[in-house]
Length: 72
Image 1: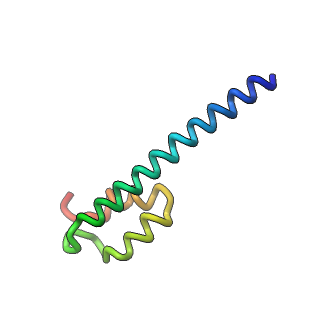
Image 2: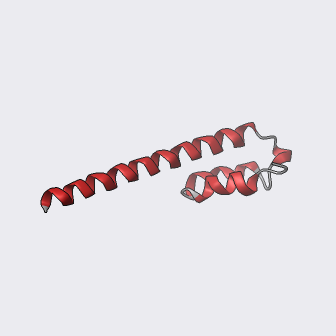
């Protein structure tokens, strides 16, 4: 029983690690996109998107890609 619990715990750690990597990659892509995007093509001020992407885990960078850019 203890072996099965340990195996489940290792699987959970693996999944959490994968999700954390996806989140980090999403943030990096959002920051790179924000830096390359002209201020005229951004909904709202660019400076406001930086803390939104950084502080609002997962939803911040998803919001940037869904709502932050005009015409995409």
